[in-house]
Picture 1 (cartoon, rainbow, N blue to C red):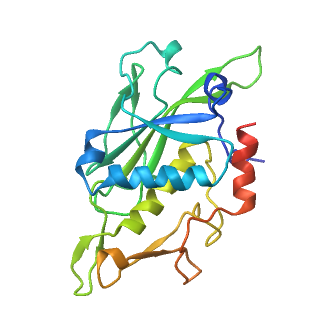
Picture 2 (cartoon, rainbow, N blue to C red; picture 1 turned 180 degrees about the horizontal axis):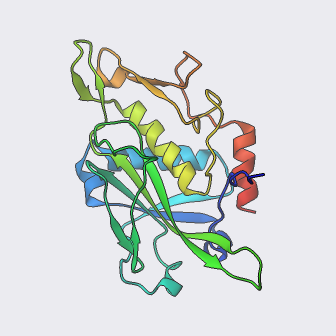
Length: 230
């Protein structure tokens, strides 16, 4: 019988056991350039930190070092937040980081983000290796779009981008598993509902037709994350 994948992935003990219980995050120049993502990230960090998950994000101005020796990779900034029009490739701690999008082509005008962890492995005797995260790269679409009332594409509103950003922050903190459909902000499928204007755009999580008016995380999902950070 195949063992189901773990719902969470822990960060390195160097990071998980720091006294502040925080992950630092850097927004790339592209996040500053495209679709106001830098400001969206600031609000997403506030929303994430309000969830009280046993870990918080703090924004910093220093990016991930591509050349630091891998054995020291746990040091410095933990997470990178990038806005991309095509699938990127990164070098972090002398390691290539290439996002995989479940067989799909990354769409810089779509609504799907991604989080790519950089793991380290600890080998003890003949036991299975222990995997821990030492870095993570968040990717969001540079120009997420929805059809307007005339059927033409236009940039999506702030509310939709906020949901995308919070969803990826939660993945970056260690949650791998998606929630059941319609359960909370970590449900895999969500849909943008275009308003008359971008500021009226909203988000639903099928099968629920009701827009999620606040960032909601089910207690079961929150417990997975809190337990992961103990």
